[in-house]
Length: 261
Image (cartoon, rainbow, N blue to C red):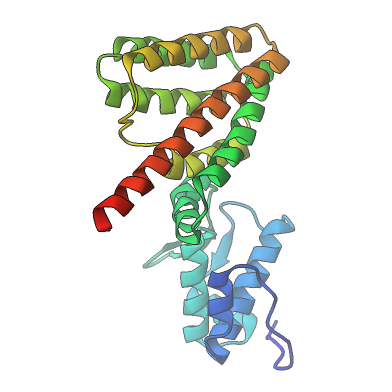
């Protein structure tokens, strides 16, 4: 049905949508189309694979110009809500969900916002502790095999601390994946983009051995289905990681200040 002229722009959260809405009348109408499609998605009136229509279809349905419809489709595509095919038989369909596509984008926004290392690590601690608890409740035999494989690979890489750091990150992510909670996994992926170093310059073979021991015990607890103990161990482990990250970040800032002054 045509959009009514007196209708106020739909309130949408976030700087992106605010920018779209207040860029002008055309953008405002475009934002209303985006908001209505989004609301239909949340109301389960639309599902992945549903055909939304062509640019011409949307213009007719909402009583707008094709320019407005085109802008709305571009925004919907950028938000990951639709997939657009060109040519004969083309048009927009509701996309299949892939939250990991936006994990890095969220990490970028967190970094640009200026969140601190303690903030990131406190959130990571909460997510990883719950992830370990749920892993003990829901991990499959395949999950356990994956965790033990990563343990073995990390132990074999103790002489290469850069590789060991990467495998440790993979292990933490595998624990979250063993929780079978996709929300936790995506949150952790986003935080690890910001918090997990590519190179851990303060790592030592002694520290690596200690980490292997903790990870090995954690896998045992997950396999034993001891959810409370798995949560407690992961909580203590991430607290240790938090203390090291905060200290490393403080040392880095002091070093930067020394160079510039």
